[in-house]
Each structure stands twice: as structure tokens, then as C-alpha cells.
Image (cartoon, rainbow, N blue to C red; front, side, top):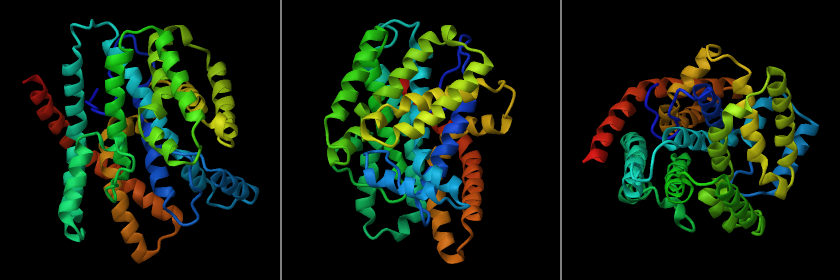
Length: 364
């Protein structure tokens, strides 16, 4: 399998989950969401906070839907592809390191090597973005300093982190770095009780803060807001052999999970548990297909890291072009999707070279 530094899992003989296919589903969900929620008529999502008026906007639209229903659903629900990536990250870590010892996986070495993996991707994206858009920045050095903050992977920890215009999805790199640290220091080779305890504590913290306030946004940008799918990924990796079901069972779980994703998204406390059903839906859909089927989607999963790195840049280009040419919405998003896949295919070998270079640094 090709090397996927941030959002990939590490294949092992005991692995039965088709992670390549699940990554394909996740990355398409993310990039379609990240474009659709900027389009005219978008229904705003509840990703980092729970806004009741966003739910009301969704329900009003669903009472009188139009031909743009798929775009509106991606706008509201598509961000849950991030949940699948978090799940896959934990799944891969557990598969790779569960049979190792603390002496083999020293904390500082583990954290440093995984930081460099993230840096190898984030640096390529930031440099490409600056090369393309640097001329248009009103304050180039201010933008360069914000890029350095992003490359530190610690930007999310700021109370109000400044965005890099056009690269807002890169918050995920900082989240992943935090999850790597928490995994090695707190969850590596630990009992399921500690994992469940961490999930309950982090969920309780979110439950007692204002649903649409800045504290909730900070929590959801950082590790506390993603411990639930991360913990589920660890637990599933440990017990997946005993969780294999029939095709009918997976189909039933998929249908129920899809319904529960919708229902739990309508009110605050259930919304905190929506990632459970997102993961269940993702696993069920993947298990319903043979590993040799849907090869195009698996190919997309194989270059998902490159697509993630480049799609914000492609999105900005497509948005600028559409301001001039005013394409019909479906043609606009089809153009973006094709451009994003092409950019991912082009940058995939570049990211592989970058990853090998930084891997050498990790061994020094």
C-alpha cells in the first residue's frame, strides 16, 4: 500500500476492514462538503459547535426540497468524513503498534516521527499555496508567520487561532498531532476501560459548555472533541475479528445508522454521539462490498492524503473562476471534483518523496 502519512492506516495480515475504500468515502465527503458549504443557498453545518438555527434551516429546506438536495445534504452532513479519518487514524495506530512494547515505541521518538509525517504533508500544501497566491496577499509576511504557526501543529491550541485564508481545512493536521500524543502517552497498550473513560470524560466536558459558544468551538477543534471516534477506532481494531457480521446485518446497521445520524443531529446532547453512528455507517458500507469492488473509489482512497492537501487550493481556484463564469451548481461542483482528483493524482508522488525525506530526518 502506498504511504499515507496523515490519514492512512497501516495494513496488517489481521486487518479485515477495507481502509482504502473507507478513506475514499471519507475524502469525497470532506471535499464535497468543503465546497458545497460555500455555494449559494448552502445549509450551514454543526461541526465545531451546535447552532439550533442551522438545524432549523435544514428542516425548513427539507420541507420544500429542490433539485439541489444532494448539495445541501453534503453541506450539512459532509463534514463527518473527518470523523471517519479520525477513526481510521486510531485503527491504523492500533494495528501497527498493539504488538509492540513501550521500549520499542519510545514517547519522544514516536511523537517526533509522527510530527515529521504531518509536516511532510502540511509543508507541501503551505508552500504550494504561497507560491500560487503569495502575490495577492496584502501582508505577505503576516501570512508567512501564520503558515509557520500551522507547521508547528499547535495552532489549534490558541483561543482564537487566526485562519490562513484558503487553507482552513489544515486545522486537521493539528488535531491529528494532538491525537498522536494522547495515544502514545495515555492510550498506548492501555485497557479498554481507560479508553471508555476518556470518551465519557471528554463527552461530559462538551455536554456542560454552551453548545454554540467559543469554548465548544475550541474543544471541537482539539483532541477533546474527537476522542469519541478515536477511541472507537482503537476498540474496533482490537476486537474486529469478533465483530464480523453477515451482509444482511451490515445492511440493517447501515440503514439504522443513517437514520440515527439524521435524528441525533437535530438536538444538542444526541449530537455529541452522532460520530458513533457515522463510524457504524462507514464500517457497514465498506463491509457490504468485496475488496475488489468499487476500484475507482479505492483508488481515490489511495491518494486521499494528496487530495486533502491540495483540495483547499483547488477550491479557491474554482471559486474564483466561478465568480467570472457563473457555472450551474452541479457543473461547478463537478468541475471542482475533477480538478481536485487530478491535483491529488499529480501531488501523490510529490508527497511520497516528501514523506521519504522527512522519514530520513526522523531516523537521525
